[in-house]
Length: 513
Ligand SMILES: Nc1ncnc2c1ncn2[C@@H]1O[C@H](COP(=O)(O)OP(=O)(O)OP(=O)(O)O)[C@@H](O)[C@H]1O
Image (spheres, rainbow, N blue to C red):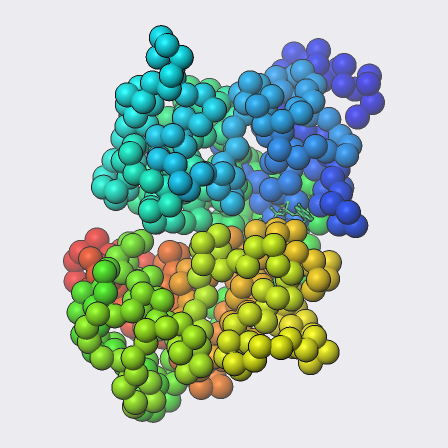
């Protein structure tokens, strides 16, 4: 923007709450943003969409003062601003929810929420009573949809991913911003928690507060947003009014000419073979007396509200959260799954959507992250890149991951592209039983289609797949049958005509199909 144009923006009558124009940002050779443009009005909910790696998080970080842009202008309420750090942005009324979370795990919930703006006593000490009561009032916003563990004194490291995500949201709300920026804030939340968040945002909107939300879930975008900005390849390509557009148009802007696998392709029912894996009466901290069997070629879903034992079952089968009772068989043989290395060697693979906690070898290269599981499976200690390089490249490319080279640190990838690498890590082991724990968190629509195609191919080749997804649509469209969990138990099995949104919701809330 020229100085003349900047002056016009500053003097304009109907200045937007936020107006970003021509924002550019490079990281070394990578052009993260070439022409980021975004206009957010006061009192609106605005969605920022685009495929993984298209520059959404970088644009938000520029707006929130975390990343310094190379070019472009940002105006807040008509005034051109230059934020040197997040504190500057906060003073201008902008607060960002970080996709990778900005919490200090060793501190309490209240300390994290109040970080940097702690109330003080007359003597200048932190006023813990006020800190806790302020946190208490914020926590109450999620009353009834968050576990009782969410308390001001709780240590963040002890919380489940959904509760940590809620704490990050509360940390943003505590700052009372005029512009709330949420970078995939619902990724770890279940349906009820997301719905509550949107209620809160609508209430803020009525007070003139705006929200900018990044989401890969088009259902929620169409349910709550007023306007949509779509980015592709580092540039803004469309600015739309939600009521005047539809899913297909938005997706076309997002992917350009790229191809998307049809997500609803039909497949043959799996052959009736002997079970590959059975569990009888298994238990651990969150699983109470669960029995199931998985045949070769089957894709079986785990449904229900978040945190009902689905993840604990998958972790139990993988030896990460060993069962304390019951029996598991693989190919007819009783096995003790007490260590993940044993599970990997028996052909099991576990993909978690919680990339922060379970997946990343932080500080290591993409290559090391890709081959980590394969080396355990093969019991190999020495890495011979000449042998592994082609394999790593093939698997990294299988989900259309964007990366500069296999040597680049994993942390330089966008969130969704990191998740694709963690999925590829397990595909590289050639698993016979694939355990997927909400694997599509943060990955874009095209990659979801690619993942489904890969799952179907693996199943057609005889693998068995057990998948938990927080998105019912994935369970309905991807699975042969779905076991619905409630309080650590399977309450219903849905298949064929009963495998739909209605029956899933009814079973999740405690009624049998
Ligand atoms: N600190 C960094 N160092 C190097 N490259 C980076 C860095 N941060 C982002 N990038 C690159 O910039 C591009 C844009 O990343 P960004 O995180 O903004 O994408 P995004 O649209 O938010 O993606 P996602 O949907 O996967 O979260 C990607 O290619 C990413 O690898």
